[in-house]
Image 1 (cartoon, rainbow, N blue to C red):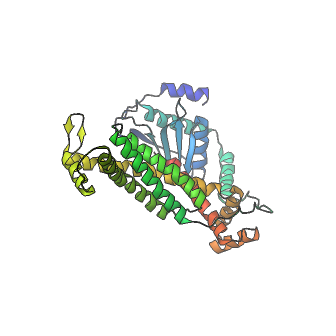
Image 2: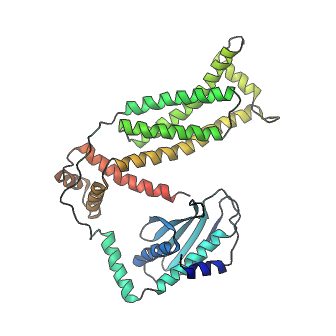
Image 3: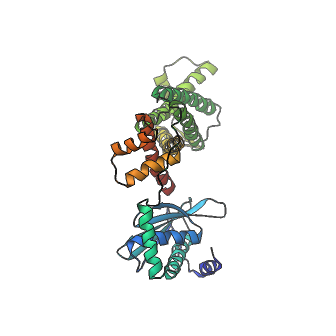
Length: 361
């Protein structure tokens, strides 16, 4: 930030917010039209040193980094008939923002209005033309050639599914072993299981070249269920093998566990507490696991197709060509196989997915 902006920031009167997710929102008016609004918002973000994470025709979003280089607030700016709505939301686990969100909103308002004053009618008209050129990709130069497709691998779902199930059984055994030894920490281990599943899926997707999201999501759910069901079964087997107990069936073992309930310190929460803990295990593991899956899948879909090819295909979509016409253009550039073309289209979708991931609060 410039010294002027830093000086103004120090004078802002803060308004504190207390909430599960602290936020602050304010509105003001502008004389700008819709076409130049977002570019000026982006210029303002750049002045403030905030990271742009999303933009469309009438809104833009940025995230601000704190002293530890981690995002601390997300700032959303939207335009509607001359009215500007600015909202800042805390990204940490805090319930009190110490007035930081109000400072972000009011600092943005000041910086935006200063940026607006810097542009006269001629500059605004030129900016509007520049926006039109950018949105229509008028400055894009069609290349004479494109990088050739990489050596193509047929997608093999069985590799991903088999690898996922084997991994789930191994994780189930590890969790069971640690639980029996008394070093299981609820919450921490669920996060560890989710990260291990995400790490495994990353490499299984790469090896198998399989990217069907719906099937991978079902596989993720199956893996999580298998981890915790097999965990109970492995605990049952370990207990029987290490002790001279009279053999009982697995379902009898589960019945005994429910009767014993869940004890937290000296408080026995009964079978209800135990069932809730199992639901918690499934829920927290899936919520983290699905983020891992989407992130790893998006990264792979982007890395397997050169960005020059993605830009080439996207340019033709911007020019309102149909999918078949875009396939024809790709074929002229050496991308003749349908699977290779499908991977290009998946990469375009992955770019949108990456944007949505960045927008998450």
